[in-house]
Image (cartoon, rainbow over all chains, first blue to last red; front, side, top):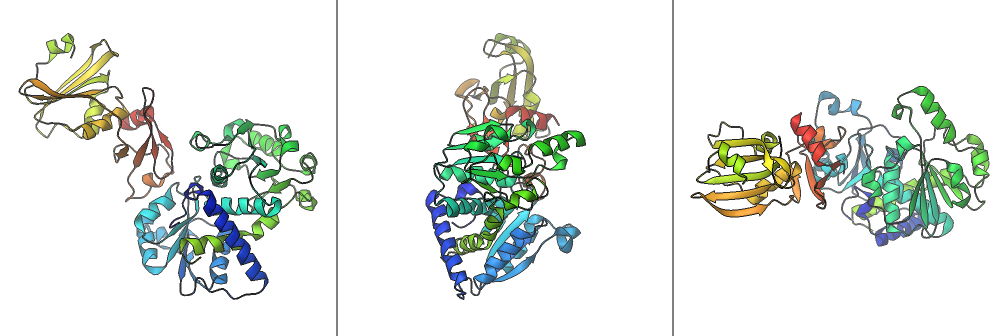
Length: 302
Length: 159
């Protein structure tokens, strides 16, 4: 693995190696071990789009491994605001760092960066296209809780059309054998054909989460955004029917889990936090060890 | 070549004939081939003549230029059933039904306005062949993976 642009860049064995590596890092961190795998390495965090948890978890992962971080986290701060092209910015970072972690609002920007730079590129979200490290983290959480990923029934809820985390998750699942995946969304936010055509497991597109809840092992919730709807009334109607609240969670089995890439606004009711199914904070806590695993892999030090 | 077109345009001595272009698209085919007219080639453009194969069709005759198969394959984007004839000394020396190219670079823009290829001055639109079956090949952007179909290409080229 030299670059990580898409969830499809990894074979199943590579997912499993990353999971095991993350397990080891969690164990070592809990023993307060000093890690130095990235000693002498500089990781560039090129966040052209604002982000809190992804940027900070990459920074933390680098520091935990003894590396150093440079970078920026908005276009305003840098010469992009002065009109510098993405290609030129990447060229500059290529000479400053050993690896570039990029988030950018344009679809395909990470692949483009990998053509410009000879250093490993990690895609931390390119437009509405992909966000593969989030998918690794999502499946890592599932494996951590259930012990495996195969044979589980997944439900992916919300905006399946414009959410990059959904694209990466659905693609990452092709490396496993989910029993079934329910794609739960309003008709106008269905997953894109380009993604669906590449799936190799049984999936069902439905509109009402109630039709699937009782059979789910994993409910993955994403936010439905206001700007996807032409009028406010329609948006509020959809948001209401895709909101995960105690009533919906009580229809799920006790062993099932609810995940969310965070940040959430109100698509998961805060009351749900108290239910045993709510595992999104635990999921977020794996962000650092999983990204430690990714960075040490792309840099070839693990 | 159909008799009707023979009545309109004479045979060429040396050059390329592209036949079975869907009616009305020959100007776009010239655009894809990068022929603007000021290169000096004698070009005959026959539009909307009868075709047994596809109803009505266009034919292009370009004298003095031999178009390679790979160059001509780009026109399958909008003319999936086109044929290329290479003429030397009034005789057809090479005739092929064009096959879609494995890669299309720089000819049409990505239909996705948020694709990096539409937004960085150095990025070029590049598509790889996704499907050859049916009468319409489709391609996929190597950056954002958006699908490019013949009708997308038409919209873009007419633009």
